[in-house]
Every structure is written in C-alpha cells, then in structure tokens.
Image (cartoon, rainbow, N blue to C red; front, side, top):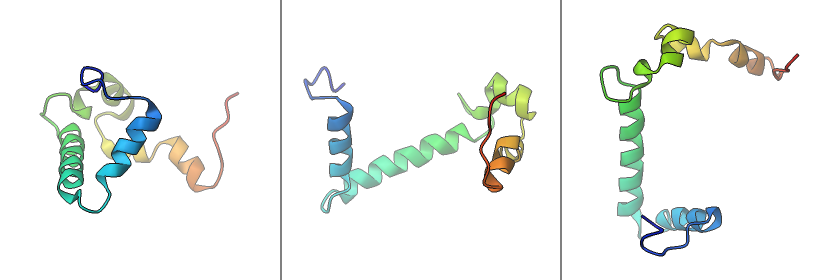
Length: 88
C-alpha cells in the first residue's frame, strides 16, 4: 500500500512513521493500532479461529497443542539459569 501511494518505505522511514503515531495528539491512531495488534494476537492464540497457533503442525507435533509446554522448553530453562544454548 505504501508503494502504491508512493510513500517511502525503507526501515528508517517506517520507524519514523510508527514513532509519529505515538506523539501527543495521535492517541486515536495509536489506540487503533494497539487494539488491532491485540486482536490479532488474541485470534492467533484462540483455538478454533482461522490461522491460530493450534492449527500449525509444528505446534501440534512439538508441543502437543499445549501452550504451556512452549514456556517449559529447554531454551527457557537455560535462559532462566543465565546460560545460552550452544550448538554442538
């Protein structure tokens, strides 16, 4: 959409546009953006909706449809101990 409107769309410009949404006077626009973001995450984490995490094969196979299993994974345990995962 930005390209069609001939608006600059480099990462630098997109960051500038996003930050401008949170300047005083733009509460309505930033609120709309945040509401949409929360709705997207909520739908993704709700079973039975289109494109939810529960329909992804990796989630079904690796975590047995258990969102809590993701948090209990080995990477989380290592990070809680202050370590980093190393390959090899």
